[in-house]
Length: 67
Length: 142
Image (tube, rainbow over all chains, first blue to last red; front, side):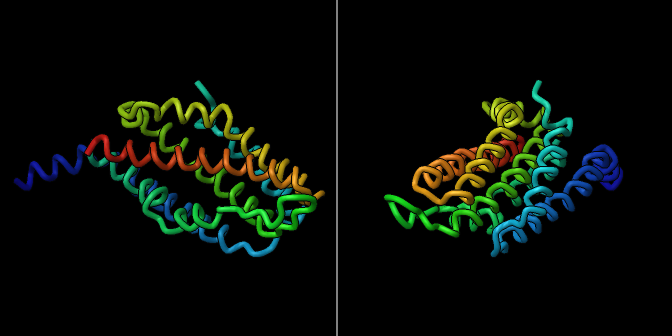
């Protein structure tokens, strides 16, 4: 019983590691969204320039490239 | 395989179960303060800026999940096509909303208000699609 549980654990270890890595990303996403919704003033030119930079940086990532 | 779905379940929490996203959807119901002439709607500027930031983040999170879990998303008809659509057009939708935002900020007239509202709705629809397909992908393998 224990041996089979250990085997299942080992078999799924790569996915567990991946999930453990993903969870903080999701948590960070939620925190960023909350912070964004707290915005009460219009963007300054610097903030808009920073957003432009982020758009270019993020959309150049491999997962954004169409097949 | 089921353990893999933990990753997607986490995404579902972020995309669908999170009050933050629900608040976003509710708070982005724009209302025009005037139908003719000058439209002085200050909130629309801030809300469109929030939509820009959240769209970029949501698209990125969805596309990364789809990229890293192709075999799971392949089980959901339309999910990959939606991801590809966002890959091809997401940046353009964001830029269009940004340009409409800039135009309205420069001249708060009825026409620019209408264009901003239209651009916003396109981005919001894409955000909703991304959320729905992520939820479907999570349910598919359970």
